[in-house]
Amino acid sequence: MRVAIIGTGYVGLTTGVCLAFTGHSVCCLDTNSSKICALKAGQIPIYEPNLSDLLEESRRNLEFTTDYAEAIPGAEVIFIAVGTPPTPSGAPNLEFLSQAARSIGQHIKSDFTVVVNKSTVPIGSGNWVGSLVREACELRPNGRHTQFAVASNPEFLREGSALHDSLYPDRIVIGADETRALEVLYSLYRPILDQTFSAPTYLPRPEPVVAVPLLSTDLASAELIKYAANAFLALKVSFINEMGLLAERVGADVTEVARGIGLDSRIGPRFLNAGLGWGGSCFGKDTSALVATAGEYGLHLPIVEAARKINGWQRDRVVEKLLHELKILKGRTIGLLGLAFKPNTDDLREAPAIEIAQKLIDRGVRVKAHDPIALERFQREHSRMGVNLCSSPCEMADGCDALVLVTEWSDYRELDWECVARKMRNPFILDGRHALDREKLTRAGMRYMSIS
Ligand code: UDX
Image 1: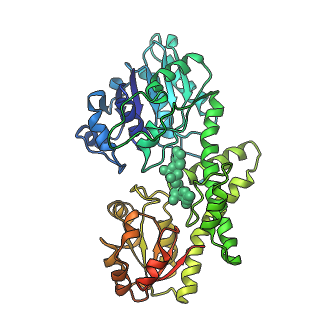
Image 2 (image 1 turned 30 degrees about the horizontal axis):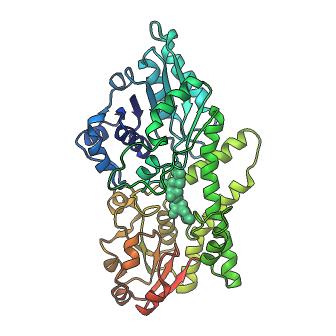
Image 3 (image 1 turned 90 degrees about the vertical axis):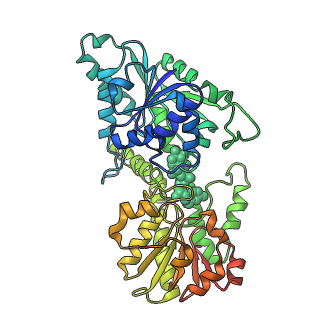
């Protein structure tokens, strides 16, 4: 099938490359010409494991452009995957979405086309996008006869494992009020639903091989599924963090508690890692948008609101624990291991490290930081904070009064902790992710404390 993808961020680019890999002819559009130039030259503007390999492998099925007139008229399916960044009120900014919808309307072919909302959009946006496309169509000669339907196809991919999540998803959700749209998307996703493509060597198919469930719903339900999924995951993390707070007081081990409850198949073991809490582009934005949407209907969502509050407390607890350990923070030097909001990405959106660094700087601390991937990006986006960036953990440890493990990169588990301990003024580490081996660190001469 011929597909156009608007927006080449994490979601758009991953979707485009995966659809091209499964045999479709895909044109990726972005209005940012430097991104498109880079992609044409085979350079990936984001850090995502294996994306450049899969792009190379799918190259013959991929085109990149900044021109709607090139991408849209031939497409049978058009994905909108533009950013919907949060506004100060918590509601997402829909400016890029409305521009994309209007431009689609100006160029869409008259035969039946499916316009798919892949961006995470407020409930009701499907209808709104449909009306914008229709308005722009009607300004064209004979545009009134253009046939299209809007569908919602939320993505559930995690940064750092975006390709795995796209090729081997737990489920595909399609919301559409027209059966024709559903049929088109069913054909598009067939190779993934039936798992008939040959898996790339670097992205092996997980065993056992099973067909992927397809859930077809109305538009509004698909839109709500996306928000509800992220809110549930976010509150699962906040729940275990709340238990961590109590565990600390009663002398229990929260990681054992997580294991004990996670073995109950009704609860499940994932998203129960206690620690600094969630960051990234989705959980904060989506829980805030959900609360804002409920507010428009005069509703409160106390569970989602509590999950957000607990997540904020986890950052405060770092400062409290450091204060307890060092007594005075002013004039101290503290090193942060990890800046990215989670391992295997260079994404710094809502990264706990940024919030923690700012809280420490506000208290007169000199903050140093290391990250295996995100240093350059931090330098570009946050140089004004005055964090001293170091190219190795050992260099960072030099003269530090404490370290905080913020991002659980696997490299940090294997550090030369004796070297780290020797270099520090006060060999103390606060493990914000329950990721390190307490005994190993203690043997190396470090004093170890975890976040709960
Ligand atoms: C998330 C959803 O998982 C994905 O389905 C959605 O489409 C986009 O948002 P992502 O933000 O890439 O994906 O990261 P994810 O792996 O879900 O982690 C989110 C945050 O939660 C990270 O900051 C992570 O460190 C934190 N987390 C996760 C925990 O603190 N504990 C856990 O047990 C799991």
